[in-house]
Amino acid sequence: MGVEQVEVHELVMRAVEKKVDIPEFQREFVWSREQVKLLAESLYREYPIGSLLLWDSSEYQEAKVSKGTQISLWIIDGQQRITALCLLFGMKPYWWESAEEWNEALDRYDVMVNVLPSKEENELEFALPNPIRRRDPRWISIRSILSKEKVEELTPIAHEISMKIGKSSDKIMEIFQKVHARLQRIWQIRHRDIPVITVRHEVEDVAEIFARLNQAGTRIKEADVTLALAAVRNPGWVREQYLPFRNDLEERGWDLSAGIFIRTMAAIGSGRARLKEVPKDLWGPDKLPNVWRKASCTISEVLKRLAEFGITSPDILPSVNSLIPLFALYHRWKNSDDFSFKKALYWFLLANWDGRYSGSAITTLNEDIKTITDSKTFMEVVEKLLERLQVPAKLETKDFLERYDRAGNRFLRLILWLVLYRRNAIDWVDRTRLGYDKTGSPITTGFQPQWHHIFPRSVLRRAGVKDDEIHALANITVMNERTNVKKLSSLKPWQYIRKYSIPSDALHKHLIPSEFINNVDEESWAIKRYPEFLVRRAELLARNANLLLQDLRGELI
Image 1 (cartoon, helix red, strand yellow):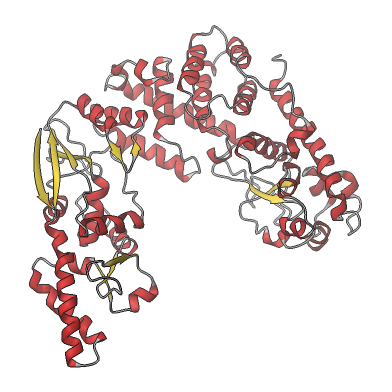
Image 2 (image 1 turned 120 degrees about the vertical axis):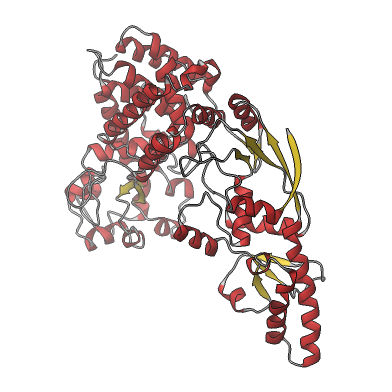
């Protein structure tokens, strides 16, 4: 292991000239504008920004964006900081492929500094650009300073600023001297020393090092480490297969973490979800390609099946981790004679109701994956999995009087949506079926329900109704994403029903109580009847939710 002190400008040049590179398992640049600003300010104030870790490997040759590289120095910890430094200097690192996207990033991540602050002389103010700062000659881009290779190049900048601000020759000279001194102090950022550690370990050790690092205060997750290990053992797999598949799902609305993919592969390839129990050779070149093929096909097929019932985005699921055992269950039993996706979905929904996979539930997940793998029949699996859940026999009216926006009620919100989707409910404004586009085709991925208060919040608040009642699930229905619900939310229910000529059948499919459908007038929809409306609609929602679950369950029990 080697340790050296490298000046900031030298680090930037190494990134630009391809003397260091990013391995394919590293993530993209994800820092915020504020983080870039704080980095610049920390360097100016000579605060430590942490050491960088490089890996010297002559064996691993897979870069993030290109093949055939001869680089052997890889950035394991410090990619975000080095990329941010390149942005501050205005110099594109080798691994940033698109010049157009780089130019956009330069504009987005610009940092400005006030060289004539009202505070004490040594407390310069750093900030993000806005139109006012852009017009103020006291504020300049730090990039215009750090990009100068020689300190003498700062003189014209100081002169220009002083000429814009000073009103007399004496004042111009006074301002010039202050500004020039401050520009030089900022320019010294170029020569700040950053500790750089270089390791020459085997790939397994590097993965372990990667695991123990803290980045921005967040410990890297176990699945990310496993992904890194799989990447170094299978050159090109991340760039050519994993990332394209993951990005395609993300574009279609399924933004899934590395943990979902890695644990699904572990479940399919080894029957385990706890990564410590997975044989190391599963991530090697002899087994990984086949496991990845099975996992990616399974994920695609299950997401298509979920879309048939209205589940087209992970955002509406109480627990995204619940997808892992569903993927494993489908892969293991899809070809068996007794397999039923409806029954699998029934268990999946109840597991979400139970919160079985919420939070850190690796032990629970591992137990269920083993059951899925080792059982003799599909029906045996489902019965065993159901026995582990602790949920009521059915949904009650009172459940739908709970608030829709509470984290603990996400299952009820999901069920509300699935019930409306099952009833072919239509959008009250654009008249298209919920979850469908205007051509009549289902939106198979990425659709997210837009939650709408039937009795608008503003109307109820003016009447003094408490928030818990305003946000009750029984007062919530769904519109399509593209619908402008402001058209409805500023009016009383009877007013927008009349204004948009919402037909009775459309109201019925949203489970509006018949006594309110039959009389669309101010008296029938008066605020004093709101408690009655909530109870009646909660009854309808509970009844239809239980019918949905019974249909999925079939003769299982």
